[in-house]
Image 1 (cartoon, rainbow, N blue to C red):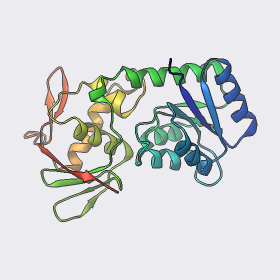
Image 2 (cartoon, helix red, strand yellow):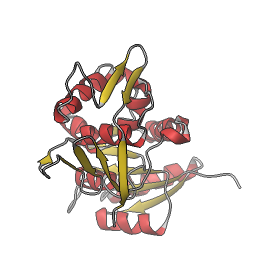
Image 3 (cartoon, rainbow, N blue to C red):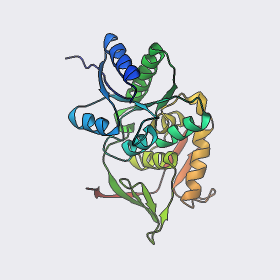
Image 4 (cartoon, rainbow, N blue to C red):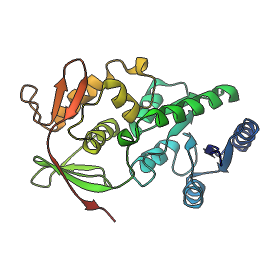
Length: 246
């Protein structure tokens, strides 16, 4: 039986929510509506989805909080497209930092929304299975560090927590999911940002530099993240997975 992509539309605006659901259904997709975060979590427990369309401005937990929580839980690999009512660069950057794969500013064309949904799903599926982010939550040790992937905490050998931004956490998790493997910048962009590469031509290099600073990784020795000239980056430190967190 042919798979039909299932989209979860989370928006407290009845007109937008029902309009988007109806349009997606008319264009061959399955679509389910949720009015807020609580409804979203209930729908995620009841059904499997291929992407979430998530409004930022909602009562209770807003879309940015929900996006962050999705990325730290068992649904961390599920693509997210954010809807925002403000064409504000800060909102867009925060959304991407929280783990969104794309965003669209209201008011929007349903046709453009459909195109973006298909593009995000296509980019996700273009990655080889062994490069897709897994949904397991483990505590992973490497060198002097431990990463608690449930709490999203990086801890040193003394148990001191080192703060990571959302983008830094995602990049580190990608490296830990694929150690000893050279990852190109395009692959890292897809795995961490999900956006078109030309919009982030230097973002991976800058993000790697920030992550190296967090790990106290000397730029000359590169004990953790090594640069492979003309190819990308490789996480070279051996890792130990301590088992799935409850």
